[in-house]
Image (cartoon, rainbow, N blue to C red; front, side):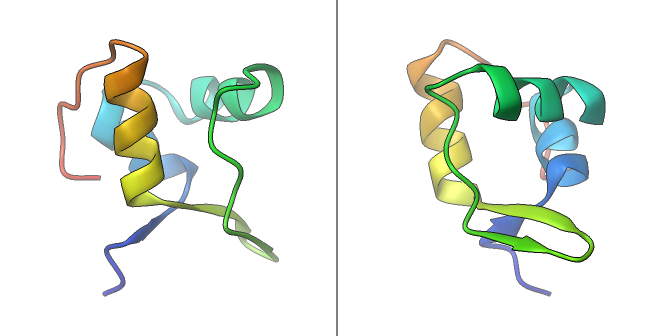
Length: 65
């Protein structure tokens, strides 16, 4: 399994929020990391970039993602 790339569902599990919230942040928050790729199944992000963003914005990492 590729653990360095995460989709909205994995980010939601990592941050303890909903997938819808993740997608909203990706659309509306300019500081949210850009996706690494946009695939037919959805966007994928660098896990490292998401963790760095979460820490920089005071969010707690609660899960494995």
